[in-house]
Image 1 (spheres, rainbow, N blue to C red):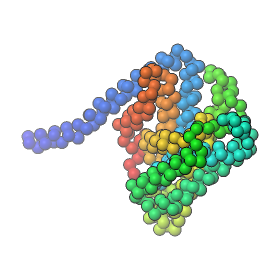
Image 2 (tube, rainbow, N blue to C red):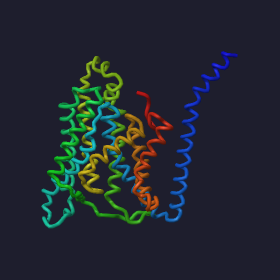
Image 3 (cartoon, one colour):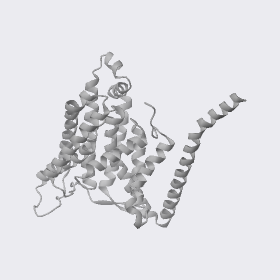
Length: 349
């Protein structure tokens, strides 16, 4: 009898946390379903507006994915805590704007640049991307290489670097948001949606191309296989004769390059703003946590969820609580972690 009581106590103890977790998850799920029903009612009232908002969310998700995919390579796969990733994004937009400004020679009395040609857009894009990539490699070699596996030191070092970059950005660039000029028409006609921004569609297309290219690089190339193997067992890869440091430099180069690309595209679609560093670092962290460490598929799904939440909350939330829409981001985070503690596509590592 005593042994039976002990067994029952053990079973109850084991099931207790799950029962509580299931109750909390059910509560979050009910809130999520209510939100979906509310959005559905709004969509039925105005299908054109709903299509525009959804496309806005997907294009925003494209921008989020590009910057978060670089963070996924650096933090998720390499396990390097780079808290300066948002600064890479911000600096990418600033460098592109300054190069384009010199090429276009705008009217000093105007706040806007004249419309760019394909050349005056691509050259700043390329210069910015590779400048940020080289800066990333420099930071990795000088500051982070010697602290591999020491996450706290890496975080403190890169936080200090991000503060320095932000201060220098304000000193050199100023505090006024500016927009990178693009060589395409402002908008085109789409079915159901109506007139829609061309730059947003280009951004979404670029994000898809980047996603496919990254999946092929990580899963089909020798470089990608070495990166994945080096993360799981660095000593074994080194023992096989592979210079793992060169491979990690390549991965950091690619991750920083993607941050620079995102900064230029974000500056063309929205604006170049000195406050973007903290915002996009937080976005990248949320996407990696929601999607799962080291998962590009998870980064894509997390970016789509976050982009749609941002877009829907800006329009469909009542005016009195619109400013609290950012809390929905953390609601998404709590909901996913309640259901999948390692993220949607993560695994214990």
